Amino acid sequence: MPLDARTDNVLPRTAMKAEMLDAETELKLAYAWRDDRCERSLHRLINAYMRLAISQAAKFKRYGVPMNDLIQEAGLGLMKAAEKFDPDRGVRFSTYAVWWIKASVQEHVMRNWSMVRTGSTSPQKSLFFNMRRIQARLERDANNADQTLDKHQLQQLIAQDLGVPLHDVEMMDGRLSGSDFSLNATQSTEDEGREWIDTLEDSSDQAADTVEFEHDQEALRAWLVQAMGALNDREKYIVRERKLIEVPRTLESLGVELELSKERIRQIEAAAFKKMRASLETEAPEAQAFFH
Image (cartoon, rainbow, N blue to C red; front, side):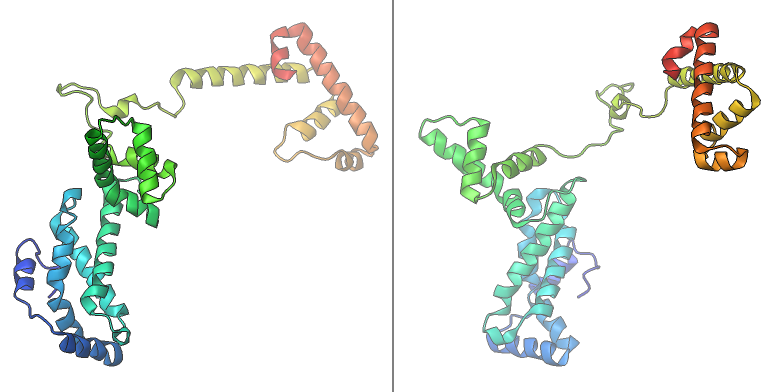
C-alpha cells in the first residue's frame, strides 16, 4: 500500500479492509522480516496495522495539520517500528508500534506548527501536547473551589504538574497563544492598508546618511591635502608610507630605505604630525575634531 497515494479516502478505506493478525501470525511475519528480510512479510505486517496508524493520526487533527500529512507520518512511524521491532522480547507488535507512530506524528506537528522551531526535547513535547489540557483542568478545579488564578500562578501549577521548568512553560505559552502571519498582510481590512513589513526599520543606508558621509569624506580629503602641504618631501613620504597605504611600512624598513635609524624615522614622523596639526589649527580649525 503506497504511502504517497491519495490518502483522504482511499487509504483509510483500504486499511479498514486489511486482515486482522493473530499473535502467532504476527510473530511469524516479524521473524521473517527480521531474519530473512522478506518484503512480503513486511508489507503484510504494515498493511495489517495501518488502521492503527490512521487511528493514532486522527487524534492530532485539532492541531491544524492536514489529515493526509498526519497519515503519511503515521505510516512512516509504523515502518520505523517494523524495522526496529524485536520479536524475541515477547511484546505484541501493535503495542510497540504505537510509540513510534505517535512519536513520528508529534514530531511532524511540532515541526509544522510554526516557522520558529517549537522544540523537540521530552519536556517541550510534553508541554506542547498537554499544556492546554492541564490548564483547562486547573482552571476548572479553581472555579469549583471559588478560586481565581492569575496567569503566573497558572503557569507555576502547570510546571509543577508536568515537572518542567517554569521558563519552559512561559515560552510554550507564548508559542501556543498565536500563529505565524505574513509580513505582507495588511494592518487593516482597508484596500490601502499598510503592510506589516512597512513598519520594519530599513537597515540599509538612508539617502541623508549617504550624502552626509560623502560630504565628510570630501572635507577630510581636502583637509589632509592641505595639512600635507606643510611638509617637505621626506616628511610627506614617511607619513604616506606609515599611515596612508593599505599595509603600513615599519619604522625599521623605512630606516633601511632612507639610510636612517629607526628612532630618527620616528622623530621625523612625530615632527610631521606636529606640522600638520599646526597647519590645520591655522587654516581649518573645524578639522581638529576629526584629527584629534
